[in-house]
Image (cartoon, rainbow, N blue to C red):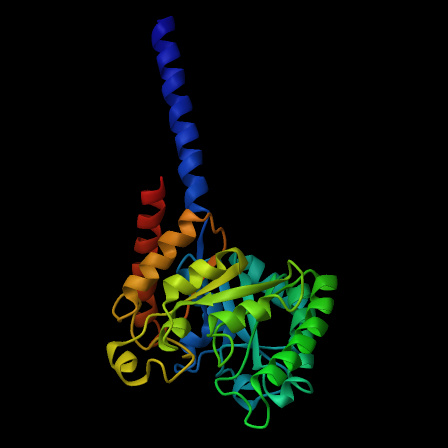
Length: 316
């Protein structure tokens, strides 16, 4: 009887410790989505929030509007405006068990207007993010280099702007992410220089599988080079038709217009997720996919959940 009891105790201990181990692995990566998915459906942010809750997702990402927009005011735009009260928004989201993974303040800082409009836009978003409980703000550059400036002049402009931004972000303990989306950020050497603009743990990178691919880069190699700087990841596939007509010509796309797994970038996404899991990434994979009012992004979510589960299982 005593031996049987010992065996049972050992079995229970194994089950409990194994469950904890696998639960820990499963908690390494969370899935969220960008509300851009519902731009074409003219959803409000609240509709996106409720969709997020119904899908059992914990994280949501959206854009920031610094001012008043009639289309947002009428409830036809799935983003937040900085005039909305962040504490009331936080309470609303907490009731649904949802939080922000990141707020998108990606006004192109490489433009001359970056110094007059971009910096204040990002800083207003940082302050709002702190109150709403969001740990990250996304930034980027423009698709084209300003014709009136040299590459070095633009880089020095952005160096100055990021130093201003990160100084404030450090005070608020908000991570500023640089997303590969434009002329400079999709080129690995320029991205490396930008990530070194400020020696701060609050300047990191938002990896984007779709933007790096459409810009003509290898998303897997791009991720590998900057793995230690990644704090948030956009997951985008690219349709075969878009890849055939625009790869190497564009530097970014707003959303994927095919479901994740149905495009020509699917294998790269799988490889990136495997490498993220192997590296111990414990952040969010934010889906950027056309939603079609639900069906396409729901298909994408199902595919991504399978890919993450497979990557975690392989590591275990």
